[in-house]
Amino acid sequence: MINCNDSNNLYDILKEYSQTNFYPFHMPGHKRNNELLKGCLPYEIDVTEIDGFDNLHNPNGIIKTITEKVRRLFKSQNSFLLVNGSTCGILAAVHCVTKYGDKIIIAANCHKSVYNACQLNNLKIEYIYPCQDEKSGVCCSIAPESVEEALKNTPNAKAVVVTSPTYEGVISDIKKIAEITHKYKIPLIVDNAHGAHQIFSGLDKGEPIISGADIVISSLHKTLPALTQTAIAHVNGDFVSPESFAKELAIFETSSPSYILMSSIDLCMDFLANGEELFGQYRNNLNKFSEQMKKLKNLTVLCHGNDVLSNHDFYYFDYGKIVICTSGTNINGTELANILRNKYYLELEMAYSSYAVAMTSVCDTEKGFEKLEYALLDIDTKIVRNKKYIYPLKMPKRDKSKLSGGKISEKYIFAYPPGIPIVIPGDEINEEVLQYIGHLKKCGVNITEQ
Image 1 (cartoon, one colour):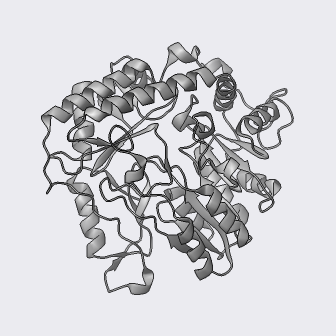
Image 2 (image 1 turned 180 degrees about the vertical axis):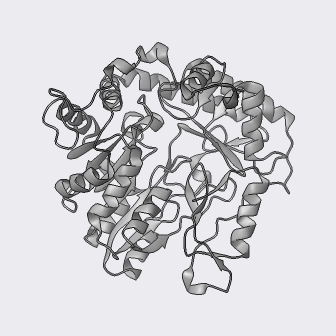
Image 3 (image 1 turned 120 degrees about the vertical axis):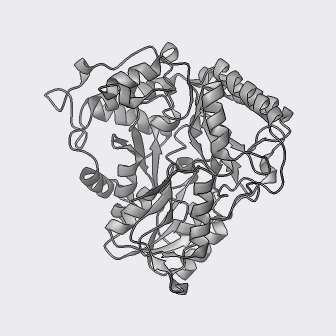
């Protein structure tokens, strides 16, 4: 591994790491695939809003042209470029549809940026809890019925926020959820950070723009060939004004946007416009991988191999997410990730107590998939089943109406990644919470306070 203390600057460390044999089964979605993408972005093109280069917050020239490319490709009514990641889009979206002290309904497995947006506007939150998959421990789809129930229990709620796909690739029935929120005359915001590729990968089922979501925020850099921090937002329908979203975005997005990042978005759009054959190859690679996973005896890859969608309470699943489940074996998710890193030179996106996630994209090579296939099949022969070992605990629910005298948190506590809060300020830190956090720490999961 690279020792960051042995080098004087980040650039040298990055260059050194780029010359190692590690294969990236993690974001960004371009996978450092220079052979496919044919290009680089050097210092000499790093400019600012000089004459002839337009203004991100009032686009009338080249940036407007890029934005129009985005809108056409994603079939959106209104699109916006984001160079502060999906986070600035989520902050703008929540503030666009709420006022200080309003009520909002959010899925409990939302990213911390949603919680931060609610905190900034002092919003009163009603939570929707997805059920938890018994074998893997991942959160299942948001049930439309739970959205309707939350709306009935929360008069005057101003919006509903859900995440789809999740970090682990679970997709919710956005069409039904949007129909329900619109029946109550409020907008649906979808954190689609992990789903920018959906419409191009044949994942139309649950794709939020065509399913009727009002605001959709997608990270290009997570699953598509674009530089880290690039994202897009879309505003559709009659419940949200694109002008009011733009006004909020001007607050949360930098006033000095990187033209290198915006050029990366532009190149990504050109790639998508001509990427049908490459996405076909990507689907073939995933199908071949899934077929190989049928040989596994101890590990399970979620919705791949012999594991099928109907085994889980998922509306749909992003097959580009390789969620490797270790429950019932003699290793946990972080141990699996360490083995893949240290023995097979495969770096995963994240590891949790009972699973690890390899993120794939259209830029992954056939050789890369074959390396992962070989590694998982080889590891599978060296581990054993153990029914008593590492079955996932359920994530605690937060219910301030039943405080029992425990300590109250002043901070957010979350595992990062994925950045979903386990505890937020004001939550009781009771025995259930302590047991859950202790379980994650015991498994080697990185717990962060903020």
